[in-house]
Image 1 (cartoon, one colour):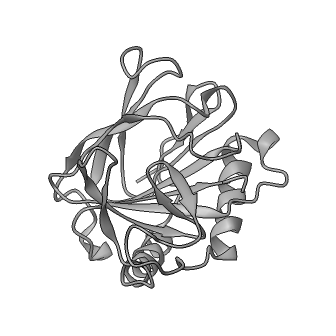
Image 2 (cartoon, rainbow, N blue to C red):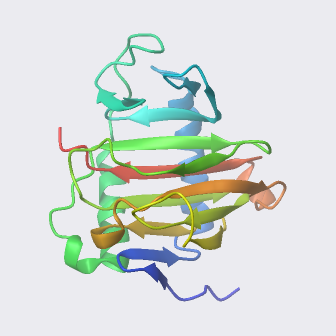
Image 3 (cartoon, rainbow, N blue to C red):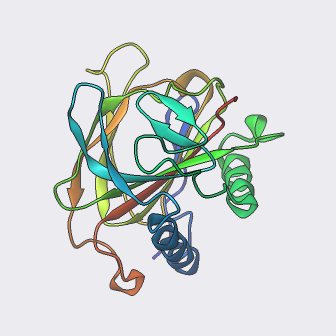
Length: 211
């Protein structure tokens, strides 16, 4: 299958279908499985109001809990999270070079949030704004396809664009789209390549905390 060309969804927001090859996807799945075991295990995040997120999350570099970053997972087991690997930072720089080259120089992500979606998991419209940096967010999808909703910087509602993200897709948002609302209203079960050995969807987002 010939990959589709990159698409600018909004100024500073670029979708690259099929950016990760199957071997890179498999390697990412295996790494995520190891991180999910600890030192801070994957968990359903509890929100300040008592709600529980349907996705399960594990963090690298810094631990995210609503709505701050810490070095230790005080809401889980109090341990420091796994280190953010340099190979992932290099992957982030490669992603920016392919999408927003003007913002690629000096890009140094220091944390990643890894979200796992089962058949029932969803993500409401939200902004990634707990970072003290406006550096771009690099997002990688592996496993089942999903409906990704990318909106505007002012409201959770319209206007927004719905995009089907497939396994291996790259989505980058920075510049004027850095603080756009976005979410995942739906996952399409059973759409992953069986060769991945993964049921569900992994989403890896790299960020610069500015901390």
